[in-house]
Length: 168
Image (cartoon, rainbow, N blue to C red; front, side, top):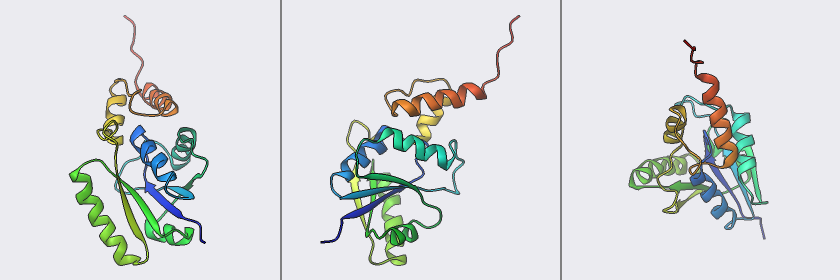
């Protein structure tokens, strides 16, 4: 019997409690889950790929999860890894529309690879990395939205970026 292997790709900038929920649930379905950290060229990244990998590793408890950088096309990475399944999290109907189009195109590029959609738990379905960064950038509390290490690193990133107030 071959090992059941899947890849969960994303930019994870930063990883949120929603991502962690999908990772932990997917890790129970497969013998090994590779979290593939992509460099999304359409997004401006707050954290480097090295930082994102470190944050994911510090946030995930499942022993069968490995985290790797995945440059280039996701399907190419999946094929090189030996996996046949891509895991994607779905928060809303809007997510489904986008993910459906991506899955369709991936299938055209690599017909042997299947995409498995996991619905986000209600408790984390509202969390989006872009919104987390905006809240943190403006001094808001994101403690309930991200793992502890991510919360600390966001505070560091944005406190360093703010100019010091001059005293009168």
